[in-house]
Length: 76
Image (cartoon, rainbow, N blue to C red; front, side, top):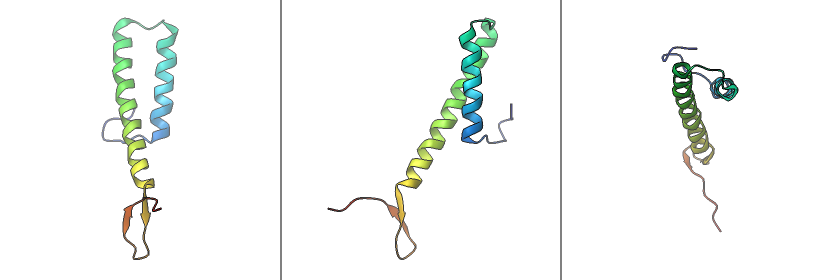
């Protein structure tokens, strides 16, 4: 696993999260390892959520003719 200074991509975080879930679903993980894996999974889920939130915020912006980014809204 990458150390905290190395930022994982969304895809890497999701892949690692899926692996941990599969490991935990087997039920063949010692309690201490399961707790550590669960903690790691929660951190990965938080990382994925933050990346999705940032992506959503960026998508909701539109570049105006003057080159300025503004929040996107539909005017009726």
